[in-house]
Length: 184
Image 1 (cartoon, rainbow, N blue to C red):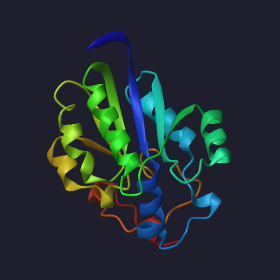
Image 2 (cartoon, rainbow, N blue to C red):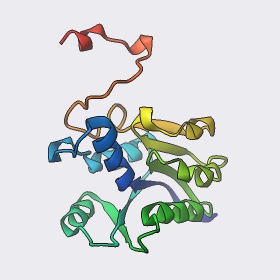
Image 3 (cartoon, rainbow, N blue to C red):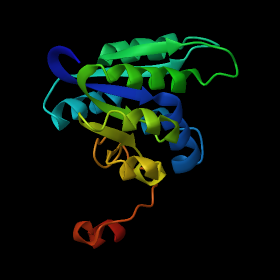
């Protein structure tokens, strides 16, 4: 493994998170105020394991590069990873898979922001000798990650990445149940 100060790499599958937010949580295209506040994810990652975090936001730039979004990512501390490829390639997934494989040779922890089970074999190679977490909406996570011992961090409830309460139905542990939430 390469040496240096240990840090957390935050790998964001923006397509997957956006599709889940719009298609499964809201059932429509999210309004700007309903989108995650990505800077909160970086802050959460740094606090989680008390070390610096490097955010890599993977983008499919095959058709075009969303310059205003890239500028916003840079302004909040993310490194955009704009990838292009053939129409048949899932460039974001392939880029994240290659990055997860490359992290095997680095002393670093990983927070993967996706629900996609395609990353499971790559994540399984990392869990033995480092901290690995998964960030997204808990109810849409591929169950294989938790079976592999990967901790799940909810974008809304743990990371607090939203300025609004999303219309989600979640299983509530009885110890956490507050009936007042249902009486409003």
